[in-house]
Length: 224
Image (cartoon, rainbow, N blue to C red):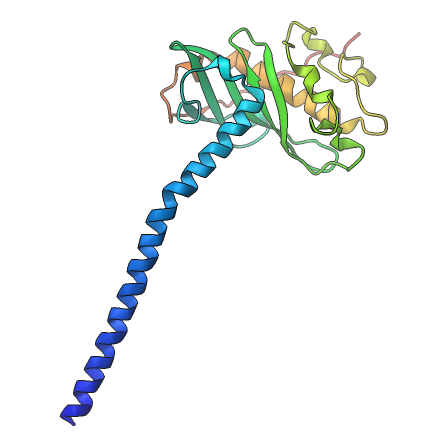
């Protein structure tokens, strides 16, 4: 009886030690890979920013210098991240996440960089489900259409001409696919409207802050 009890205790202790060893191994693996994964994710975000934000525009860490914005009527999504680029201590650009909710095949996600004067530095599509061969011309790899936003502002073209040409606006649409470029043009214009209305508050907020804006943009009158 005593031998059986002793063996049972020994077996239990061995199982406990095996479980402890496995837990330590898992914890050690997680600790070793956690920083590497975080660094990889950070590098991916930084590379995405660099597509719309020239490297000579900032000397800070725009990933760390960011705020969370709740402004669905402006940016098309419940929560968005806005990165602040700074050069010699002065804000040189805002890089905003935005969504065009009215794409032909669903929401279109964008990244838009805007300088302090309200001029677009760059726009890129980060995710979409538009029709291959038609709506996917919004991708920089498919056509240069998305580059047409660079250097534009609410004054160039005039705000009421922030539409596709079919609607009397400035921006060309695609043959057989008007809804997709229409949605993107409207989304970029709303980003510029947001920066014009709330850019000062976003630039002044502490890094890591969450800002909420319950107002909404007013659509421009039809182009004549």
